[in-house]
Image 1 (cartoon, rainbow, N blue to C red):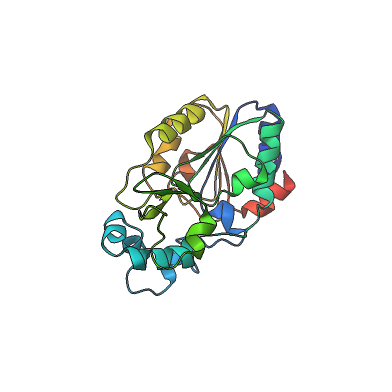
Image 2: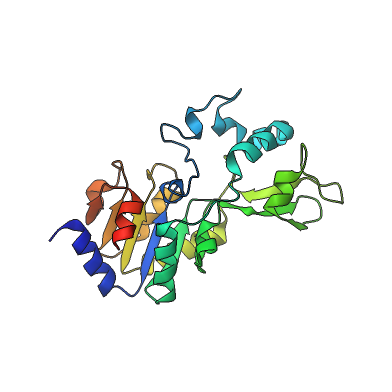
Length: 237
C-alpha cells in the first residue's frame, strides 16, 4: 500500500485526529516562513529578525520593532488554502479534535476551524498595555510609528516574542489534545523550535504522521513520513 493510501485509511479509522502545524501550512497561502530560502531570515535588515522580534528589542526600540512587524509579520488579506479547509471539514465531521499551530495568522479560524490552540499567539489580537482595551490588526497596521490606544498606552500584538514564555493554558490544552489523539499529523514544521516541537513527545498512539518537504529530527520516530508539499497531500485527501 502506498503512503497516501495508508494515510487515507488511518484517517477513515480515526475519531480523534490532532493536527500540529507550522509555517509550511501557511506558505501556500502566500505567507513567507522564517527559515526557507526566501523566508524572513534570508532578508536584509539592520538587525537579525530574531533580535528584532525579541522582548528586549521591543522594549528598547519599539518604533523599529513595529516597522518590521507591520512590514513582515502582519499578514492581512491572505486566504486559507486547501490544508486549512480540509482540517475545518474534518472538525465539522467530528473526526478532528484540535489544531495545534505555531502560526500567528488566524487562517485556521478563517477556514472555519473552531478548536485551534495558537502556541505563538495571533496577530488578530492586540491589547493596550495600559488599559487592556482590544484593538484590531487593522488598527496596528494603519497606525503611524508606535500604535497607541486612546489612553496613551502602547498597543501590543498578542504574539509570543523571543524571550517570552508560551501561554500556560494553551500549552496544557495542546498537551491534553495530543495525549488523547488516536492519530497525530505533524505538518509544515521543521520541528526545531522549542518548546513547541517537544509537545509531540506527549503523543501515546501508534499513528504519528510527519508531512514536510524536508527531513526533520523526528522522522525516525514517525510511523509514516511523507516528504511532499502540504497542498499536494491535502488536495488528495
